[in-house]
Image (cartoon, rainbow, N blue to C red; front, top):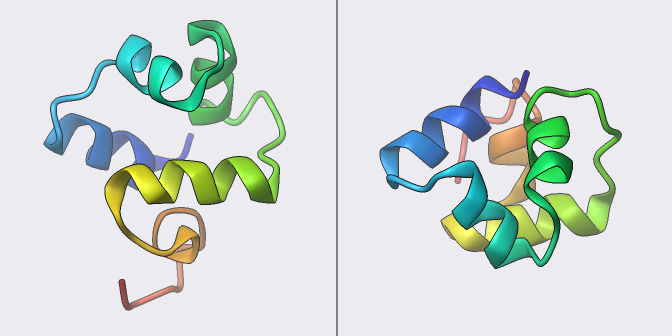
Length: 67
């Protein structure tokens, strides 16, 4: 699971349904991304990061320090 992604979603009070709607994908598709059962494309990583106004590395790369 992408712990930082889930934490950011909780912090912003977004449900998985809201995230999926903002991304234009199904809720199961989004849940699979969050639980790492579906491969994350770079495009989708960028789209998710844009929702939180951070760089994709901040969410998906554990050694990234900055935003």
